[in-house]
Length: 352
Image (tube, rainbow, N blue to C red; front, side):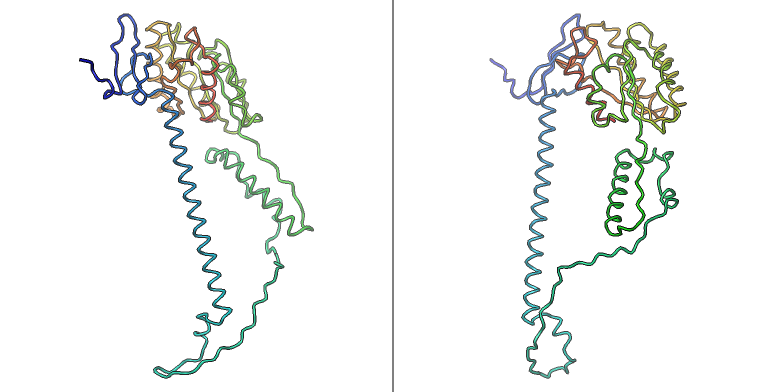
């Protein structure tokens, strides 16, 4: 008797002896993927993209429905305004009844229609500004100091600057003879991404939105100690609360013990706290065909990193097992393919 597999969308195939991998079926499309020690449900990248697209389409449909409701309300208001104006011209407005002399109760009087002069609408709108231009000293006092940028996002700083520039243009239009002062653009917050050779080729994606304030520092073959030693020369004392994203640790898992890796991370954390910067630590990416000892060590390092970053008040970017999917790791099982590098760079860019 043939067993019906359609009622079981998720099937786990027993893993083969001598290997730490197993064939797991996606819970949505029932396609198989080879993954190491997957527990619980599994969803492939294609199904996740489809779910994301469905969510985007639903959001767009909600926005379209909102715009349609707004349009219906506008049409209703226009019709109401037209009805009220028509009644005013014919003399049936409620203001006329209210303005009539006080009538005694139960006494009927004959009220004739009075002539009403049509309204004269002027097409000229007088614009007058009752404000004055701020003096340079007062304007400097109102600006937010850069020492408080930890409480303000980068987008808020740019939006405030655009509002100041637009308000300055309106002021110059209303009062041409007023004193003009060219607004000074605030210094942009510096964003630095530093790490090992996995960052090679990610500069275009990460720095594309803002090439003036973002930079990627790639140190091929670097370990945690190498990044600690290079920090002093990369972050300058003049940087005001920069954003620093650190991705390192893959090379340490090849030769160093777990205790040595923890000590190196703790030394890196003490150095990072001296920089007065916003810190985010990126998790170590998984590897393939490098032995079960190294793969297990990477999992232990990431679990410890998650707790340690929370204790030290650092941010933590967890990539999980995303890069074990087909087509993301190169043939050596260590570096990334072009597709994998693009996914990795987008993860870092979205965090920034």
